[in-house]
Length: 277
Length: 244
Image 1 (tube, helix red, strand yellow):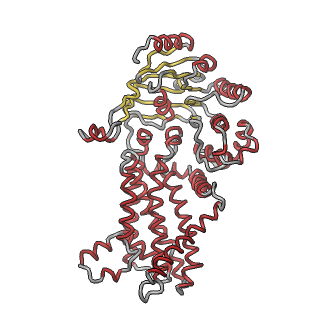
Image 2: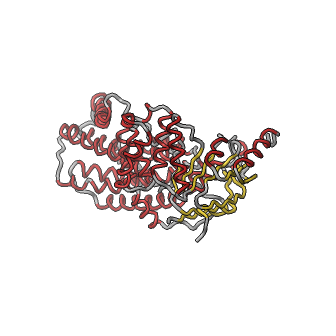
């Protein structure tokens, strides 16, 4: 017979034990993510087609603004591809971040009635955002890349590398935000501003030649942005160039550090979450 | 081995908004910045096979006690021991994802309880049958009436075959025949030496289903005993306007 004891101040539950328990809930994670994906546009006339239409519309908007109106980045025909690779991957991260906190505060009924590893909530959100990213990248290859004369090379096989490292980083960040937002709801109000600032500070809408003449510390600041490493890895893989070893190392380091900090602080605090819901 | 399915010892729960930890700041900025003592030292031992009712005014600590027993809320002090598999009736009315069909919500409910895909698959049809949703089960949950959602929630909770079933304020769902059926399901659970824990404002429920009623007020147990006398004492208390 299963005996569970809830004590007032139990020792921090072992993280390996937690991960093993999480594995037992993998079907739930899959079902939640699938539910989010199929439910997101359930009320819409076009239904799941929106998963394809959305990135297409986004491509259209950026093409109109940066390709036609602002006249393409002088002499760089690949700018639209450069830009969209950044927009899509950044969106994956910001969606996971804002969605994870929301998934917990929005599932108060679930969290106060059923015991399950709470990490399934941010994980399901990330799987949903990852699906959106993969669909976007597919449209990228069918639409944007041919226009810009970019063809997949063998280096495309390395795309899972930045995807994995960036996911680790993203999950770390998402769990960290969720862990803060649940007791201190105010944090939620900062998130859109922080992500917007981060978006503009990352080389997405602008290229690095912009800061060539800037002082060394500004350049250093730009390059110490974790997103700088991930963008560089994504772009090289997508455009069929070899991955840079330095960015690979930095991306792995950022990913590991944030994953460890975020997930362990999330796990240690998840049993007190129900108090704030 | 212990004779008790549930043992709650000296449990205290205080809801402490974050702002109350910041001196001054909390008082100035947050109107909800006060501590709330939801449970202040509750002891309760529930033997196997007992159906127990929890009675009390709003804010007495009923839901908090249920959450502590369900294991979703960690107490500030004290211990809770639970022997057996728990299931909580999803505080009916929400479901998991209102955009999804009833059927997908059944899957979510089973998997959230920790069942494997195979175990869940075996339960889907019995749950649909119990809920009497018929073809509506393939419509999105947001097209359901509140009674239909409640029936679905009840069907999931009961079909998980728990040893201990926790119910927070519901029961009057469905028509007379559905109510009879759910009562039967709860009685048969208790008959198998399972436990039922019901918090409700419908006093009739306690007399019908419970062996013992615990009356909570201000986070403390005021009285615990046979349903009739305890309810009477509670009624007298309310009438006298104590604590109002």
